[in-house]
Amino acid sequence: MERVRIKEVLSRENTGQPVTVCGWVRTKRESKGFAFVAVNDGSTQENLQLVVPAGTPAFQVLAGVATGAAVRAEGVLRESPAKGQKVEVEVSALELFGGADPASYPLQKKGHTLEFLREIGHLRPRTNTFGAVFRIRNILAAAVHEFFQEKGFIWVHTPILTSNDCEGAGELFTVTSLDFENLPKGEGGRTDFSRDFFGRRAYLTVSGQLEAEFLALALGNVYTFGPTFRAENSNTSRHLSEFWMIEPEMAFAGLKEDMQLAEDFLRFLCRAALERGESELAFLEAHYKRISLEELRILAGAPFTHITYTDAIKELKGAKETFEFPVEWGLDLQSEHERYLTDSIFKGPVIITDYPREIKAFYMKVNDDGRTVAAMDVLAPKIGEIIGGSQREERLEMLEERMRESGVPPEGLQWYLDLRRFGSAPHAGFGLGFERLVQYITGMANIRDVIPCPRAPQALGF
Ligand code: ATP
Ligand code: MN
Image (cartoon, rainbow, N blue to C red; front, side):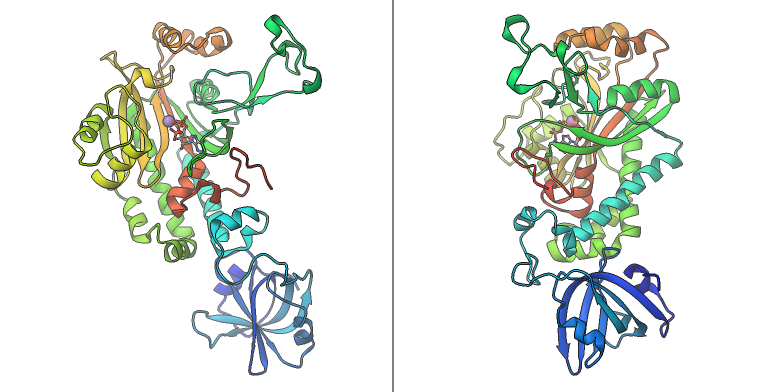
């Protein structure tokens, strides 16, 4: 008989019917002539209870079954007399696939710390916490596509390998097929990358934005959703070396439309998580107390606070709190400043706009005041920056000036400048770090706990 996923079994009303399930044993106990086995197959937060009568062949099989074992059970679906579950399966046949030795199986019924679980990255998806996080991650990933597809945005696939080293978003990883024991040397004893695979130095991309721009300036509205890589040595709870980024780009749009899109997007994602991941979110709420469903419901509907960088500096200068880093017009905001604005002053998401041109990337449009650029950062409570976006500079001369002032050599970016030579148009977009989003919705404190295989400095296990 075909196996049914536990999520579906638990929603069935037709008790009395035969059913077959597979999964991993979470707990097993015996009482009054029965064994009770809780199994989980990853399809849902809840376990299914198997009831195995003593003296049956299935009960014999159970002798070798402990937490962690993979099993297949056939039986009949029954209404459950136990609290907290509507149905259970009275088992007639049980098959043990692979057992797990209780003496060495690292996951025990007692709770484990998230730090410990990071060391067993291959087994942590079997815990309630990581099952919840990865199912929410899936809900959000699907909702990202839904949101943009409904709006007619075209999903584009920008490259992972790039020769573009001047986006200024952080350190890059070099990709090479050169022999490290015998590197070809050129001028000044430096490595000669013209003899490398691509005939030039190659990197892993830090962003798909520049390519998304040329696609938007042809297809109208586009978005990317793919992996990006940053070799910044920041060992924080919100930075990964490999993370997924969503980058919409819209032609014939400015900062206002960009901010509207970002807000609508985040609210849509909150709603999707609440609608399709309620039991996962409820588990995380009860267990970690870092999110509240109530708050998420409010977030799913509430408008965000908007403030200019200049006004944000005024707020921070007037703060009662003392900060570790200085607050001065022209300096970048540190995460302590961002937290103060979201958590203490505005108590919700905040969009900061119009940053000084000196601290932002060369491609952001210079405002009429000449001192600021049409940039926006969306800051989320407890996390800080979750989205960074801008209207792009569409004037050729201004863009060239900004490249000079930011020290970006124009040679490799002639194609980018071409977009301003041929049919230039106002356009805008943003980047949302997907893991920061998953953190925001799940409340997980460390970004390493929202991706199956976190990459960070000195961390490349699993
Ligand atoms: P931060 O100041 O937080 O380091 P950033 O300004 O360098 O971020 P952007 O270049 O604006 O980031 O990238 C767009 C988005 O990508 C950010 O808003 C954030 O959500 C996400 N992001 C950036 N760096 C990382 C990282 N190392 N790990 C995970 N997400 C990241
Ligand atoms: Mn940013």
